[in-house]
Image (cartoon, one colour):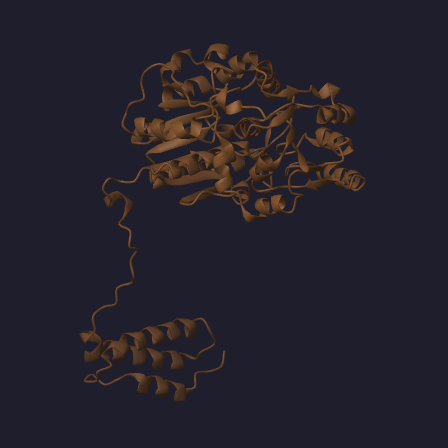
Amino acid sequence: MKKLDFRAEAAIVAMAPPATSSGDGDVPKIVETLEFALRALSASSATPEELAEIRRLLDGMRTSPALRAVEPVTPPRSHLPPLSAREPPLPRIATYSQGMHGFGHIRRNATIAHALRDAGTQAVILMIAEAWQAGAIPMPEGVDCVTLPGLRKEANGGLNARFLDVSDQELITLRSKVIRKAIKTFQPDVLLVDYLPLGAGGELVRTLERVRKHGRTRCVLGLREVLQDPETVRRTWSTDGWLDAMRDYYDAIWIYGDPAVFDPVREYGVFDGVASKVRYTGYLDQRQRLELAGAQATQLVTNLPPPPAKLALCVVGGGVDGYALAEAFVAADLGSDTTGMIVTGPYMPPESRHRLLESAQRNPRCEVLEFVPDPVPLINRADRIIAMGGYNTICEVLSFEKHALIVPRVHPEPEQWIRAQRLRDLGLIDVLHPDDLSPRALSEWLARDLGPLPTHRSRVDVGGLTRIPTLLADLLNGAVTGTPTV
């Protein structure tokens, strides 16, 4: 940096009005400017003599009667009072999504957050989720995130860092500390945990212990209706300490399903000790997500041929094991009046996605998309859906009342297969076992006359998002005892 030009100093001094000047209010601004210059020059190549000269100018101006006569400048304050001072105080809600694979957990919590805000609760909602997932999906207004480094669940059940070159234990420790500090600082009235009672790798244990011992936070465990097969649930939930966690740490258990479809309390037999905490919410109606869908998803629909042209949509969840279904869809006969679209999901292996794109080039009526922040505008537009059987996908099919062929995952976890069978038995969806998957099977289903659109919402309880605000109010008011209810 060039040495200070003392003619510039003289100009600065000349800017300072005398004590009797009517411009006394300008003096603090000049002092602030000189202090800034002093800090800048202190870190530069200015000589000690130059720094001493600026300090002398500052000292002289600080003792000026003009400066003493000026009222101190108060920085502008927010027009909103502190949360703790508002009457009534606004409820604080924290949600936890473990990430690992797929967007089901974070999307479920984001949908609930939107419903709570839309219901007029004025809740202040802090979501705790993996950083790259939180940045990838639309978030409701008035909701923000504390983000966690990514975690990946391997096929053998092991946990590894998704991006960082650290051990699994180092990553769990880091995530655990972030969660614990966030909850300690935010002090939520309610902590809503999705699926894993102790978090991924037990990362919630210390947070739950502290909340139960010192805090006022009420804890809710949110569960999809089908967890796994009964034998696996009974074995793992006992040996992993999850049953003890439900009893010791949680005030309520919300099951996002309709017991007329699948009743986990009756089917699993592991909730006996906490049955009074259970509330069935009903499935979560996904139509509210249309309000959150970004411009990208909406534009995709705009670019499609308008009705009566038809859209057959293939979705494969996160995509980690969705290649076989997507490849069969690309090779299927869509019909002359139908456009096909595949959303592969961000977890489909790159080599699989590359092969899929090559196959799609041979079918000009089929388009492949890697990832859509929110696919519900496409779900809403689709005439037929071919998909795997994850919880969120099924909720979308039920909410938008679509003809659907579900090709569920069967191994290593049969959750999707169990869910698909129950819905098929109720006549709500068609199901194809993955062993029977082929382009011909999909072509035949697409060519069938399926009749009028189904009326799922009149046959299955999808009122979860209207019921959860009431459950939250009951929880805040202490009314969390009783028997399992819908």
